[in-house]
Image (cartoon, rainbow, N blue to C red):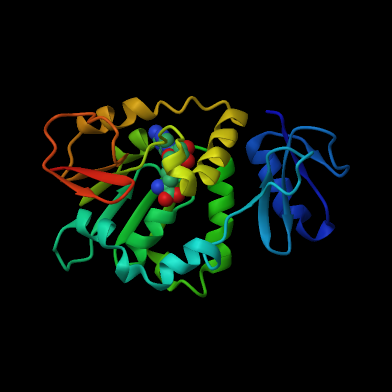
Length: 244
Ligand SMILES: C[S@@+](CC[C@H](N)C(=O)[O-])C[C@H]1O[C@@H](n2cnc3c(N)ncnc32)[C@H](O)[C@@H]1O
């Protein structure tokens, strides 16, 4: 792994030692000359993909920026709300592609329970740290179970899931500029961890399991992965294919 954990300040030594051990990567006190780093500052855990472009820093934060804005007005998230249907009950949603947890947070803020699974350990640590920092302000985080692992395997141990939500990586195009920054970061992290994303096969694998509902997020013009879609919710750049 061309990535090290860099100890900038002794204040966060314990946390960083734990992460380095868990990721099985070196812990250094001297800022490296090349590669990627994971470190801590006062705003929390962060990742820099290329130490020679330190401005390209990835901090996951749910309280500010676009995520903070979306959460303040989650009632306006009509597309995601429609994918869940009209039921007023609290649902249990299995998010098999947690990423930065943006979609899962909307489900949580709408009053549902979410089990979110992420295959990248680096992303898992960044998101877990963001949850920890935000838990006072976002009490609905107590309805989240964040798991590191392959969602296809993790799902097999779950019971009473009302909906499986899948948002596999799709190719960057000019039309997806808003997502592109984040997607680029995720792709770099997966490369560092040598994770073969297999985005195309994830849905097909889930489709063969027992489920009540699968919600598959796709680019608006993306080809159908499977023909028997029950209904579609369409936005400007995104489409949700729902299978019941
Ligand atoms: C496009 S991102 C998801 C973004 C997320 N919906 C959000 O709102 O931030 C896809 C994520 O799914 C993860 N992923 C893909 N296949 C997975 C699998 N089989 N198990 C767990 N995570 C997976 C990838 O590592 C990546 O972080």
